[in-house]
Image (tube, rainbow, N blue to C red; front, side):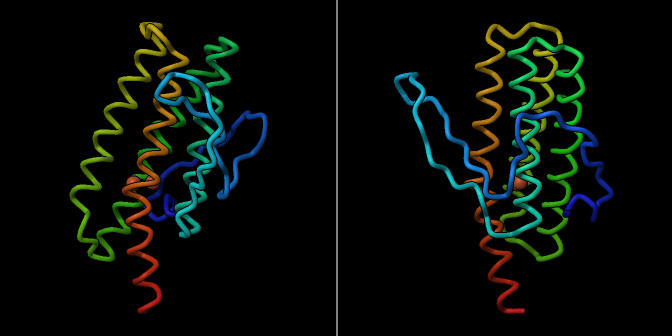
Length: 168
Ligand SMILES: [Fe+2]
Ligand SMILES: [Fe+2]
């Protein structure tokens, strides 16, 4: 795990309907008309450690959605903290890899991580203080920004790392 390189903690306990895998596919999303539609989004980047961590992140997000739906506030609090800790460690791990390999897109990628952490903290506060007008929609948005980041910045980083590996 790349988190282990920076001493990041991994979530110790997860309660989900099913385990996520590196080849996980998110099947449901909302289209522009606001209707649910099936999507076939492959979220793998091809860098195993990164993919494993993304699968775990998405697993926690899915558990948060379940905790919101079942109104399990204790579980929700635990999961939000796990997501914050794990995402922070994951981002630090990616940033360490970027520095180690002199990645040219480091600054822009780090800025994106910083923004996402701020958004995550704010969302967490809104959900815990029950100030969110639409918790389910917010959880959906959280999942969407995570997927968007994986499919854009992380995908570009993974391609760079794979090219470095081939060249040795
Ligand atoms: Fe990233
Ligand atoms: Fe990532």
